[in-house]
Amino acid sequence: MPIFAVHYTYSEATAADRLTNRPEHRAWLNALVDAGTVLTSGPYPDGTGALLIFRATDAPSLTELLTNDPFAKLGLIDAVRVVEWLPVMGAFSE
Image (cartoon, helix red, strand yellow):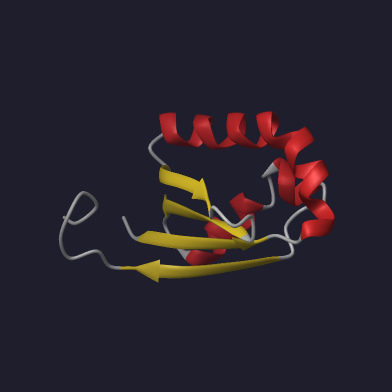
């Protein structure tokens, strides 16, 4: 199944609301980790966004799935970039 890198972009204007809603966001991601859909994720240390690595059938189905993220539902993500990724070595290569 294809692997996708998802880049979230955040702004300082949403920082407080992201902090408040982080437990729901992480619970949603943890459920996807348990299901094998999310391979890993984490924020950028400077607070400008996050990188999430997913397994998904295709980009449109992943884009639809991302609408269920509590951060997305609350409008706390400024931009989303979904890119298919082909790891050739390391933990995620096949």
